[in-house]
Length: 425
Image (cartoon, rainbow, N blue to C red; front, side, top):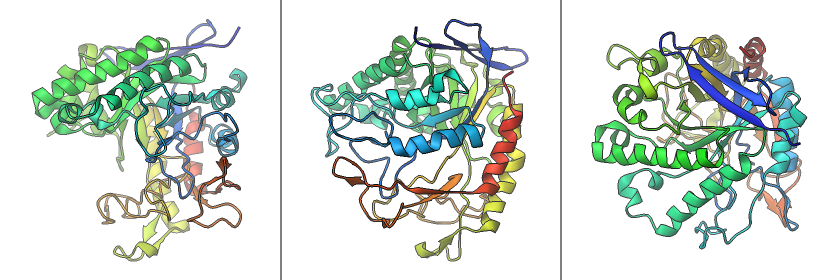
């Protein structure tokens, strides 16, 4: 008989402790907290935004097309054995991929059916110290934003709706899967609370999409990841209460001092997730948190990015005292550090060191910059003699050797130290 896992949660409305449990193969529920890392190991010169895979590096080889097994086979044992993590968050796993040119397949199921058995089996590890997987389904803004939805071609809506259900049905049977996120940062003030017509549609779609997943995988958790906007629990609580298929509120946060504003709010904000009541009161999962270990010698010159022991130590000095704090908040059921390795996803031919706002400084960050490709616990470079702009594919498989990792031990030591102290409760 194949192993199974059944996930459940509860929250005491008075004292606010959130309890997350997992029952394996019909056994008794065991309390657990997620000690995680985000894992989106984009090969240098690749991108998580590109078709056809849009960040899915985990599919099984098929018909002579070789997947990225060498990449994740190296990493999984490091995540569990060295970092002491028990969970990963991946941003994309899909039963059907886009066309090579980025078009949506029509019919939606006309292309290759992708499985992820080998990757999930490796994560499960026969149930011995498994690595639980939070699966990302990257539903885009047009599936939630009313004005965009109304002008979105039906072929796109049909694809996402059906692939969502098919993916959840396939992956929901695997014991390594703890649950799903139906979107990442597709929120905004207007659609979450400021404009009622838009908010009604946005939250209605959240429930519609979450219910598709819940119906297909009833034993798994369903959530989403939104920006760290305290006005969501403060001003959108009535909408949140209309989402019974959502099991947890995921928050991508980059706080540098403490997590109090997320849970407790502030004088001008409200009461945070601790202040939510009734059916809107649910566990909180910190779905992203971390900082780049890089700095700049010239803020206007892209070639002057660097890292050294000092920049890494600056980041570690922020991480060290904050990590334990996350697990001290009663509503928090876990944290995913962003992220395992540098994610080279913006620039096709060279490392991206600029922020989305143009490379300007971010004074609150340890080294003063938000370098999107400096967040990793491990930095990466091309393997062997491969150059940065060499293609990632060769014939029908990865261009070998795979990228080389270099541990930022100043950072990993802080994560390891905290994760060793966090146990099932």
